[in-house]
View 1 (spheres, rainbow, N blue to C red):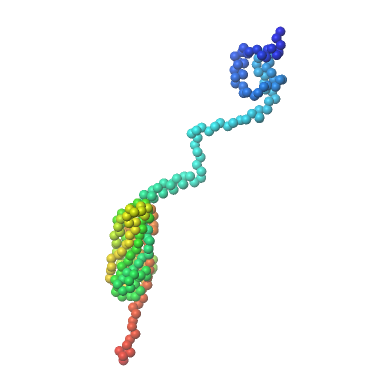
View 2: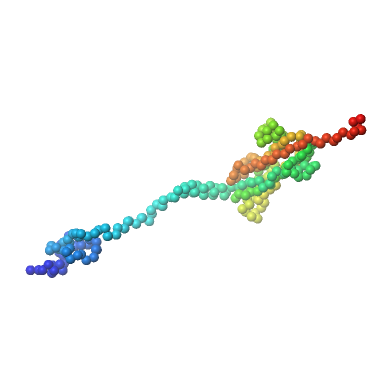
Length: 239
């Protein structure tokens, strides 16, 4: 007769027992009251606390998709718009409108007294973009502004001149050429009467330059022409 202890050390003959033993997790030696039964099969792990067994979540696959943070889509659009802007020029005024005439030299306020005068306007422009600005045309327009200053009404227009501007390299290409130019209108002779006048300069009026910003291509100034000073009458002539 075999004892219980001897049967415990004999090899298992049942194929089902081998399978059960291979698939059970290794939990250390079983308590004495949970030894194998007489038929060689494992007894249930009665009373074992399964909450102590660590449970590891499955690892994410290497191709898992990263979640976008709020604003990522807008940021990608901004990056592409900046890239597109880097291929364009940008014409910017770097002066106000200056006036030249034969009697008072250069002034930022224009002729001060009515009468016939030779008039010439000038301004300075930089290309602060990333591409060369090709040759283009700037325009000078003068309005009689007594009725409405700032309206740019065609019925108030008294002078219009188109001024060719040269090709201008971007300021980002140092040493490659001129990144600025000075626009100078032709000298014109005209009679100005007393009153208010508006003068505008518009850059690239025929859209020959593809620019980063097309909304900053106008500068404006106004000046007032006083009535001609009348000399006091000679007392002898009055008699």
